[in-house]
Amino acid sequence: MAKYLVTGAAGFIGRSIAAALLARGESVRGVDSFITGKRANLAGLEAMEFVEGDLSDPAVCARVCKGAEIVFHEAALASVPRSVADPVSTNRHCVTATLNLLVAAREAGVRRVVYAGSSSAYGDTPTLPKHEGMLPNPISPYAVAKLAGEHYMRAFTRVYGLETVVLRYFNVFGPYQDPTSHYSGVLAIFCRKMLAGEQPTIYGDGEQSRDFTYIDNVVHANLLAAAAPAEKVSGQMMNAATGSRITLNETFRILREWTGYSGKPAYAEPRAGDVRDSLADISLAGKLLGYKPIVDFREGLRRTVQWYRGSA
Ligand code: UD1
Image (tube, rainbow, N blue to C red):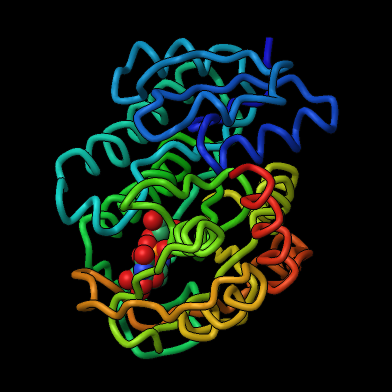
């Protein structure tokens, strides 16, 4: 019987959490539909019990929750532009799947669900840094869907007593992030293209900024969230990020140096639903979890470039 369930275990963040749990000798079950997850991401996770299935099917949720004590809910259909193109699919795989999972978790006697929230919930309000007390202002279907999941978490804590913790991720990047899709995270796309000598495209003027968060920080926050005392964290939502930001233009300049790409970026129209600036206040996670980032942006980017170089 697996103590931990990781949803989206063949995705970038899910597989990274599963790998960290396995490294600690924990028993882990993973589930993934392979809609965006990759079989190749399961390499190295052979000790994990793996179930292929889609959480928008309640029977799959019931099957995977059986016997689990802690759930890391990472499965989602990520990407703002994907949600703009197909909001119904985003709703199904982010909202319906999350509700089904919560119902099954409660039924199965799961103790705690740790949920992958998104910084997109803050929207494009000018206030920086974004802190948890701010009113949500979702401006894309993706942001709405991820925020709905947060509300379901809290409702399940309030109404049914299921322990839930929401971590609002800020632009997570690192090894295993899929660089091949039009909907991939920008750093994965830039690394792949620039290492291959291809010209990357910057949407807008490149002066938009992000609190790009290296994957190890997010894994660390998840492990802390799973272990923290319920009276401190259950029903709470907090940012998981680094608390610093960088523009796309600056990121491009660093990558130019590290990848050997000698060209310029192409500039294109800004993307619909895009947020201008994003930066987290990480003091609440510090207070509730004792969280501090363990790998800074430059070091994370250096490791990421190295990884894509090796896996290309
Ligand atoms: C948003 C969320 C993030 C979430 C992610 C899921 C915000 C602030 N962040 O990320 O928490 O994890 O969705 O997908 O809402 N870009 C280019 N060229 C490219 C690709 C992207 O210039 O080839 C630009 C985008 O227009 C955007 C920035 O890079 O301005 C980051 O884009 P992306 O990596 O897709 O993430 P967000 O939409 O910021």
